[in-house]
Image (cartoon, rainbow, N blue to C red; front, side):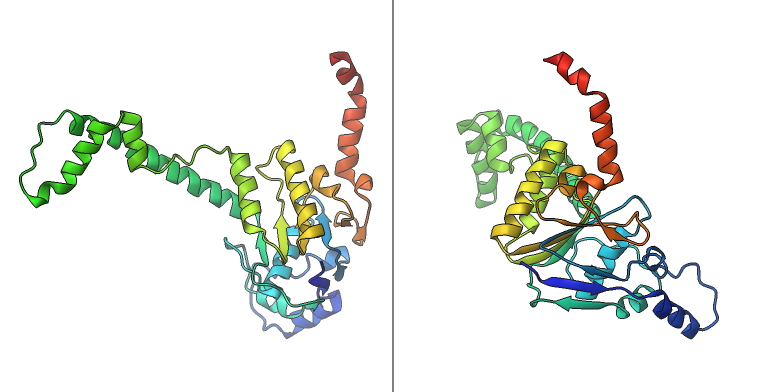
Length: 288
């Protein structure tokens, strides 16, 4: 499925024309001006799965944020913007194959991280409440409480509950299950699968963060199935070899100047993994 077929970024000439129109003042940064044009990246054409590959500072996250802002995609966390971000976005052009759906969004590693922090905070709060309930159970179970007026009714219910149930049953009845049943990797994976729905454009920024190699491969399968069977389009920034190897993905190498498409096996990071495991292949044979 294709929603976004093409996206144009400002050329160096367009950026220069903008600079000439700016009033003479002191600015700390003109970001994102000059980031992508310096690499000769003025346009991208998309497939159902398109990947932006590159090292830190290559501009892959900038490109995703610009596209997301231009299309008005929903997101959960804020991102760094300069005074000129809006000016830059207004110079961009998006070519849509069909209208975007309401489910379309950008998902960043910050979104996942904040989600896991919130889970941790909830877990800590639950742990504190659970300790309080353990003590409450003992107080109620062995109390000499006697029902006298209607104002005592709520206390009476807790006393009766404590006398009918074990301590663990009492706490479970009065407290939601502890959210710490999932690992960080499971929580991160759940975040992606809950946010990505049918028929939508999704921009993913380094989705491999917080995911083990096994979880990354599960995510790859989920994304491939979503693109193939459920009407989704994905544009992602990553340097994970598992994600780079996705079937049918168009990969832009932002480390190249000018930016160009490459096969995943040609990428420097992937070659580094290949060379490392080839060098140590004997170690694996020795374990058999």
